[in-house]
Image: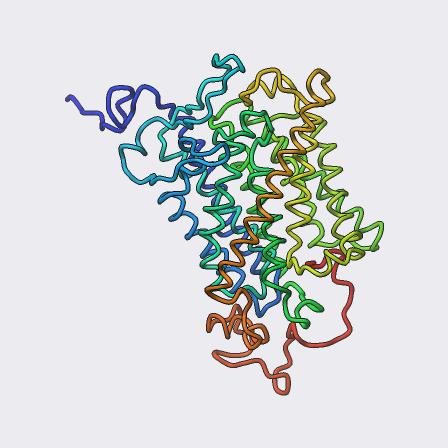
Length: 485
């Protein structure tokens, strides 16, 4: 008896399976996007919720939850095309919606990415992955959402939630889209040949610098919180860290826009660098503070993941190990030594130290990419032919200068634009919570608390409850070399 094959499975014979569609690439791209999304929801959400003081667990998680949702809606409404659409300015694309099926079902293409020689002939054709635009929009959307969530780590424990709700779409629109278009979407840094494989600059330098800048404008946490800010659930923090680490397979493995050999190289290098960095950071804690810190290990893991991101599919495994050694030591030094000696760094209350774990680690990774980028691997990914790192001679020395200049542009833009956004938001709603909310925390801000440890609806009362409270003053045992900054 004859059977009819459903239209979705009729290869190259129907509108749902056009001849340009590669189902393997499409499947990997959607899986990668989901892995990146899981880094934010629930990864960073529960990492933040566990890493902060108990009274800020709900607020910190909610800032992540809200930021993810707000970015996705803004992304499809106007921000995607500003990042990956037709060029408006050398650093910005034209705004437009990414909502209609006519746009979303056609083959993915980044129109501004055609690379030309100086004489006008085409050097590298436009980026046109073998899957629909809908997959590209979603994949890049979760990247943007994670960038905003990382930024939030600098202002936890005191930023007015209403100010955050206004800040998120403004920063996405006027800051993130500029970095994304300039480096990935066909802007001037893309065509100049600055290497950023998967977001060392676009995601991590931008969110780290913007977070530090926002922390300056929002102001510090309460004096009591700055002096004592213990994590309320280290095991929950580790669960979030695990999701972040394994989710990075999608973060770096999805950026070749295909399930190819370069994608495999990127995933392996990511894990090599992260593991090395974690071990180096932990051993530095042991050597200088006599005990390994769990929080420190997580910080080392993050700096390793961040450092390898701009280089993931461009370097060999031995280079990933060297980058891990440096990512586990340089940010460790800036956080544990330099931060405590610097008046400026002490003045700005960067709650989770995103300046060190993301901005410094990301910039370090970008510069090291200029050293270690292997020519054959570069040819698999980059639009500029004959690209190479300094250790391979030729034009490699110039590449380091390009990497430094590209990172400097992202830093400068985020300092200026984030400052302007904070000043504008401040005209509408206070950036910082009122003192009463700072004193009470989640219950005052949301009317909700993370844990009901003493009874249903009952407040903690030290005169009748014998449980540990994070505000209880007591002789503190060693709690780890790396406390939240």
